[in-house]
Image (tube, rainbow, N blue to C red; front, side, top):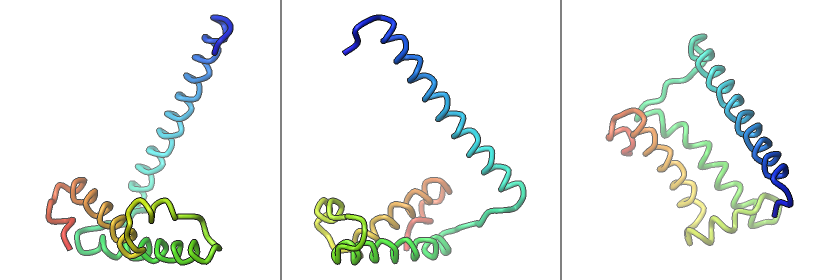
Amino acid sequence: MYQTASEVVREGLRLLRERDQRIEALRRDIRAGFEAVERGEFTDYDESTIHELGAPVKARGRQRLVDEESGTGASLKRIRVATRSGSAEIADGVVDSATAAFAVISGNPEAGSR
């Protein structure tokens, strides 16, 4: 794999630089998010409005499956085969997962129920 010790050191340094760059990008994104919240640039979601958030996601997922079946969109065949379900169930599963995550984050176990 590596011919010399210096190659190993160079690779290690390269990996450390990449990691540091990813961490710095994450910090910038987090800082930008906090600044947006301070400016009031956010939307509150609760157990009743989270479903409104999921509706466009469901619609896009269903359209992607239609496009994939007609050969015009990105291939989602692996997802469909893995789940052995129809497009509505896949989209519903994505939204249900997001809703469950919201319930955990909000600390309200009822937030994820429909």
